[in-house]
Image 1 (cartoon, protein in one colour):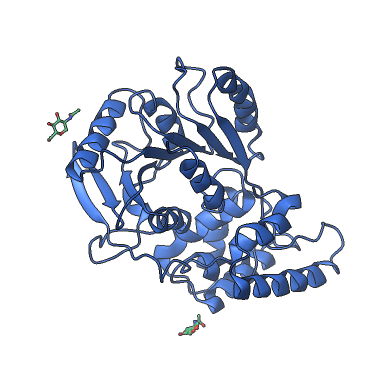
Image 2 (cartoon, rainbow, N blue to C red):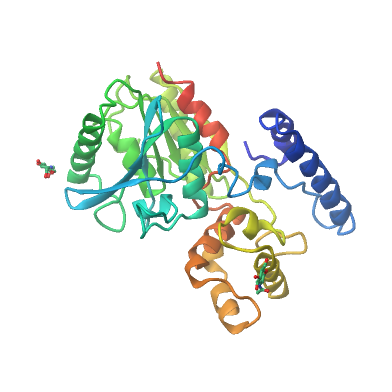
Length: 347
Ligand SMILES: *[C@@H]1O[C@H](CO)[C@@H](O)[C@H](O)[C@H]1NC(C)=O
Ligand SMILES: *[C@@H]1O[C@H](CO)[C@@H](O)[C@H](O)[C@H]1NC(C)=O
């Protein structure tokens, strides 16, 4: 969980086996504490340990070698690790595509590799999940025939790759979350994760064998928070295992963009951060003042000839700004909780 009070637990819990990372994280937290203690107005805020996990932390474990296919008028991009233990289907949000989940590589020249999407896939592959991503037919997912088409695509892909014996799990974000919540009545998932989406539970009959459901949500979005608070007891009353993980805002720093986005150098990251600070987009402690989508940072960037951000990385920066504000964005920061959910509901 990314709650303010529980960050030190995160640091010493799941990543304590990485001693050098731990030592540098502790040093960094001390530095941050010292810096922030002079500011006064907002509480000192240690940088969460998982933000110190760089974009390339899987380099020695997995490489992107996805297979791109077309079927039923859409594209599917997938990768199967050696000895897979489960199949993970991921549904993107509105305006998303399968190409966002995979870095550009010889087998996928058009792939985009958005920072959070790519880390979710890498986490899955490194834990021996075969990962399947499919693009929606339109801008967002639709709840009618598209469910049947995607159900058939998943079954076909599993059959073709002879993975029928493995547990099947699903993660959907935003529009993809609503889609997965409904698709779970068409396909047998061992468990599902609904990210920044409350699901369609007020519009469907939830069967008692509905899969265990984890909500990964951003409580700043109070509408969805209330819906999740409303749906969880309903699911529980039917004997369905449910839980929620909250994602909260975090401060940006000079190195955030270099740490999270492949292709952003430290110097460009620092200049971006300084630009955002000088324009008042972030406060004295590095917190975004509004959602990234509502912040006119692209205009500020255009007007500033000093910050040479690769134009192809604008959406990547946008995603991190939205994530830091923590209102509505894809997140890989809760990967540990997400994959523990899948792994603990596989029988
Ligand atoms: C999807 O494509 C396959 C092969 O092209 C076809 O047999 C199947 O009927 C299609 N499914 C739907 C729902 O259109
Ligand atoms: C940033 O640093 C790299 C080397 O690390 C250098 O090649 C590049 O020109 C620098 N970019 C800017 C905008 O200063």
